[in-house]
Length: 137
Length: 137
Image 1: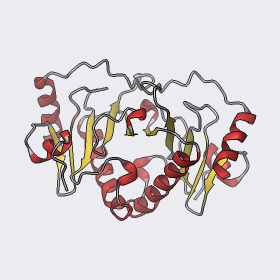
Image 2: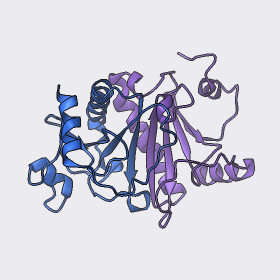
Image 3: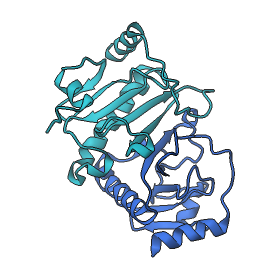
């Protein structure tokens, strides 16, 4: 079910640490360390699928219920005004990690158009910890 | 089920014309007339829901199967290298039309990062017709 060379499988296995937003048997949600906005979260299935086209159709209902649950959690706890769901398929679309993932990108009023180019600024550990604390409280 | 003031409900009802990519009882897919890329398609449920948080959980499996089917159709017929799925929730996230919709944004190798600002250039009718012809063939 996991791919030994996949970064996200290593995060699921705990080989690589992450700032966990939510976890259950089916999915893991964690903060993007190159955030496009405050609270930018990545949601992944625990099973290794390459991208959206490889997600088994019979499991889709369950996965998207989780995506909704996590979206609501972030919306309520971080008091955001809106959010974008973005999911990239194949390298031409900017897919870097070969493991299906959904971006939940929180937005506040007046943010303007979504900038998909993060400028590659890595978040500070302490800032990420503070966000998780807000979500867990 | 429909909202009389909603632009997308009017497209579903046929009051406003659209370049249809795919249609069945559950969903309608049509070309965005302000495309971010060649073949940019909008997928909407025929029932009027405001955004992702209002989609009934029990229907999610069926809706996302359709989204996959339409993604595959576009990928095969337009011979694209990849695609982004983008879905905006609330005005702060750029949601303009108050009817749940998913963007399928085709991408080709070398396109570079997704630009979410289309520059508001409306597509030419004839170009849209040619795309539909490719998809229907």
